[in-house]
Image (cartoon, rainbow, N blue to C red; front, side):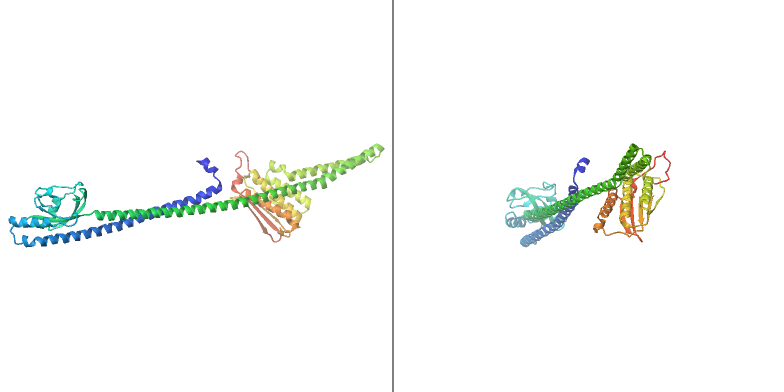
Length: 472
């Protein structure tokens, strides 16, 4: 997995970082919306179900009141043992049917059924203790409600028109003198159908909501993807342009360095070697003629050859000073400033602060090259008479400051300072590669260059090596 992550390009990582939070947010919103929609719909469905059942209960109460009124003329004056009156009442109630499945039923308090016109197999049989398929008491509960004056009861009951069990709600009252239960019931199929339809509508709305949210999320992901592709193409073009610019600058730097070395070889060593050749030719002729001045010519050629050797060493030191590798940055800067002062006559002062950590190879080379480039620019353009170089280590790394009293920061757009502008960019890029900082400010007078490398480029000293007096 780790290897796979390392192989993912920066653009892909950016796309993943942009899309994953978006998808997580969309998923959270979708889940929250679905939960809230279902909760609100359940409340609405529960209210609808309660309203429909309440309407059914009002309807049942009205039916039972009508039945009670229909038998009042016979029931009210009859004594409890009037068999003829009871027979008349049962006949009248058995005739009162309505709808497809509606009818009135009568039970005695002991559970014996007296009236069931649509389910005649129940008549004259005792149903005390009867329960529905869910275990809900039926007849006993109806008798209990009748004894209390009346009430509603829900249970499962066989529907006469279909022969299938269905949910039913009944309302009963009691004829206390005769100890009868009179009631009727209606099936809740239409209520349950309405509730099921409402729930189906809710699910459809939730699915549509998920679809819309998914479409929005897909559009957002595509937008992020297209934006990422656009940014990637743009960044790649910019990177290609910068790479071409950097390559050209590298070529320019190489050509400039080659030109500098060629000039120094031609103007210095080449002239010296030509002089040595002429001095040796002159000494040879004088020896051939027996001239006493031949040793003088030989001595002059030896001196000129020594100067050429010194010049070769100087050029070699400028290209890659051995003292930097052997003794460290402090001594290398000391040799650089001394040679600079000797060559240019500019008063140069180096100040270092002792610290125990040692700079790594990259930091030493970068700071030395910055100092070398800065002194070269000062020599060519600053017209300064005094230069100060300060090098110190501190808690956050190591810093080098180069100050002069010249004419200050030039206009880098001027053709006269084109090379200096390239040198300043090279200094800044060296610090950027080390995650350091590079800053150029105006002095009073002159110019100040500050270069700082971070703490990670300072190595702890070896345990068996005592601290050195100079910055390494």
